[in-house]
Every structure is written in structure tokens, then in C-alpha cells.
Image 1 (tube, rainbow, N blue to C red):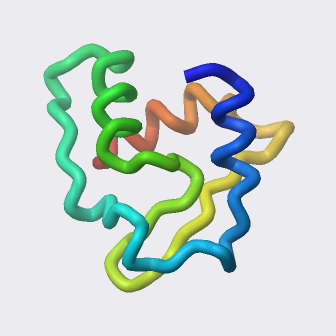
Image 2 (image 1 turned 90 degrees about the vertical axis):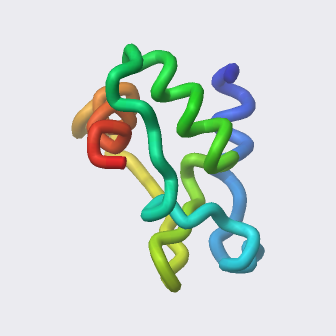
Length: 82
């Protein structure tokens, strides 16, 4: 996925999305035996927009601080917990 696509997904407004249209990540299963790049691809295929997800009955907008952990590191940490 290219940077422009990530920016487009990140720009989706929280209020414009119905919870029923979001993937519940508590039900997403990723093969932890696969390399990180393959797990990343699996996750993106399953959730669609990695910035707007669902956890049970709650909508979640994922954001990252500019001065914190890199997006790749944060995403990898997320994959390790799914």
C-alpha cells in the first residue's frame, strides 16, 4: 500500500463510519508463525482501514504521535497482540 492510500484511510472521519461497517479486531486472527510483512498483509486484508476499527461494541480511531514510536513499530506491536 502506498503512502497516499494510508493518508486517505487515515483521513476518514470517525463520525462518518457506522460501527457495523468496521471489522472487530477481537475476532481477527493472524498466523504468528509468519514473518511480520506477511502478518501485516493479512491484517490489512482482514480489517481494510487500519485506522478505523472496532473492538466489541466500540469504534476506535487509531492515531500515532509524530514524536513517538514509528508507525511500523506500532503496527508490528499491534500485530503481535492480535
